[in-house]
Length: 199
Image 1 (spheres, one colour):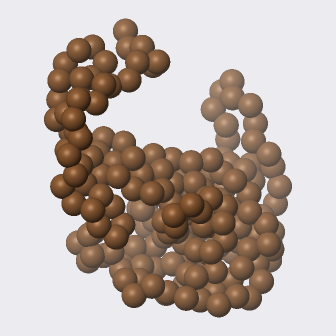
Image 2: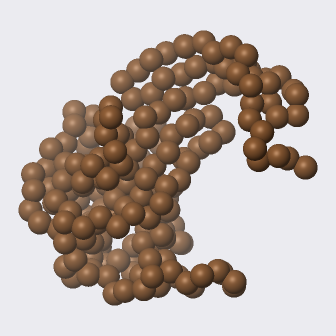
């Protein structure tokens, strides 16, 4: 049986590439249990993802071009990586305004997720944003996106059934739906906070 307190022992670590967003390293480790392995690891500073809801209860999503996903235009929640020394909430406020042009007055933390723990340490903190006020959209040079407003129940259906297929977006939307009591908790679990979506 695995021991959750045990960790791998790093025998060597070699940088392969240090980029603007990620760094790639080769690490030779001794895994819990004694076996040795060489791992290709992508190191990432972390990110924040935000589901903005307006005063009518509509969700503001972004339709963003993703070259790495075969050139698809994916429907996503606004998100972005943490700047050096930046905490997740500050990042969430900044990214929400930069991508949608709206500034959140209230941020509700929805936990965090590991995006792909098989090869990266990227962790994304999830937030629900409400009480939105006009700000200034400020897209980066590598961002091509448009903002789409959709009824929140429709967004939840797309996260469950398809149409929204980006992992961080699915997680953020479903955790927000659970926050509002729209998803039934599993048997034996404590019930989540319940409130009608409002801005």
